Amino acid sequence: MMDFLSYLEHMKFSIWVLSSGSVWAYPTILTMHTIGMMIVAGVAGVVDLRLLGVAPSSPIRPLERLYPLMWTGFWINAVTGTTLMIADATTKLTNPDFGVKMIFVFSGVALLKIMRKQVFHDPQLDNGPVPDKAKRLAWLSLICWLGAITAGRLLAYLGPVSGVPGLTNQ
Image (cartoon, rainbow, N blue to C red):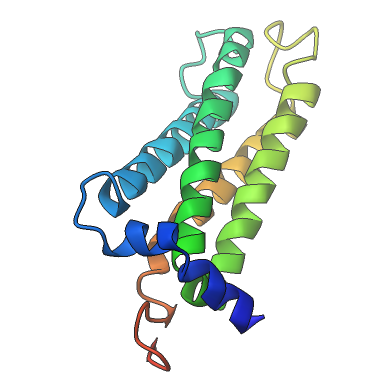
């Protein structure tokens, strides 16, 4: 397995991503990854907070129109995250924190789908109080996106250190 991960990060593209002095390499990819997460987690957070009672005079149903924007943010993250992961495969894919991050991300995505189906397809959505089930889903979604952001940020501080064989953060 380590041979395959090493192969990935020794590809010309991976070396360019991590070692190039070009602004179009690592800095732009990481910036786009941050923007993608800002979009998906930020917009999901807006929906979640509205379901939890923030801005009660605003109708909920129109927020469904934000789903294409959330999916745009997700796909930006999928592409840039895969690029960053491949470029540093032996570090990222051996770090338990990376697995935690992915669990939060995939759980958050699953919750987006569940919420759209179970909350936004409710014909009574804006005709009464927000159902308890919708509030539970909103809390879970907030936890997932905050967990994904936190775990992603902690990748720099936990586990193996990029480029230094055998060195780990404690």
